[in-house]
Image (tube, rainbow, N blue to C red):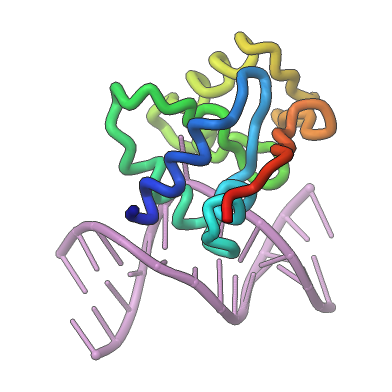
Length: 107
DNA sequence: CCACTGACGAGTG
DNA sequence: GCACTCGCCAGTG
């Protein structure tokens, strides 16, 4: 299993209305400290993957794509709000309310 | 091989 | 909050 596949496997488990941080995904995938690799893997994600990539935000609840000119950040925010995810006045997800806290971790 | 970059994060001042 | 720094790794030139 490649590192990308491990990462995708975790992202796939994030339930609707919940979000996880890059570092959290890395830790759950057994790649602790490699948050950057998660961002890289998602960047390389094909379009019709069906993966809920929009549920991955920074450790502070920010959407990393917002400062990109592509407009993908707005798409991500729209998809999250559509699932009921709330944002505060500073464009951050209310993590206390929406951060995913899985009960079981992989080996 | 080296330098730089990027959907990151923790730490320091 | 802002500005740095460092650690991390894959891709690019």
